[in-house]
Image 1 (cartoon, rainbow, N blue to C red):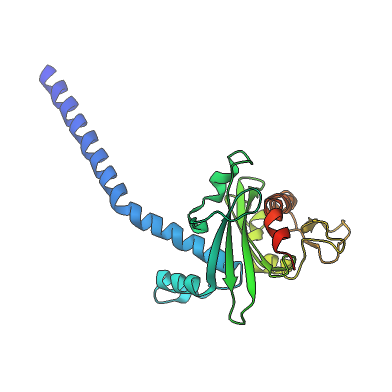
Image 2 (cartoon, helix red, strand yellow):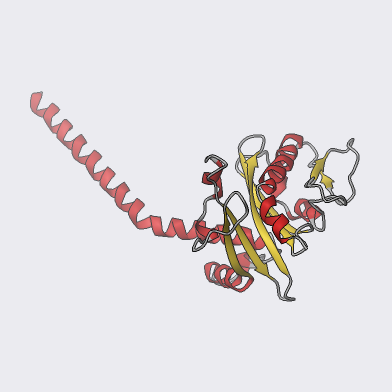
Length: 240
């Protein structure tokens, strides 16, 4: 009986060590591929904010397609301090906007991506981060070189209700933001409101909320307002 127990103990120990080693090896081998997938996904979201990259799914080589489009249209990146000044020798793509949100506002840095379109027009792309009903929501807001007019957006979520709040990642919803403005005629920052049916529309500053997804819609409204507010020092310095 003792011999049997010893055998079981040794066998179990060897199996645990072996499985742990295999899992560690798999994680090490797969990590570069996982990082590459995350990089491609992030580049694609940035491109979507300026209405680019939509053919990625049908491309023969998705990664090559996305990297080519990104290199073609994202001409430059900036990393800003809280005063809106550019920090030298920093790559905005390497900045984790979610991690920065957890820091004190006096030491955060803010990434900006500059898109140059085929017609030569400039679009500044700003990451936005916030909370929906069930979890984080994030995305990008692109502003034209007047530093006021929205030229495109992309939003996504983690865990919002399918058919309701999850609709923030659909093109029909996002297209509502096109040509909306973040400053009113007096120059005050008011961003864009996401309004329910019974709320009065605000010309140039409102879009329709998702039916049945009010909490997510209002969470997105707050996400845009709060995130873009961090970029006001930079925006005001570059307004035409």
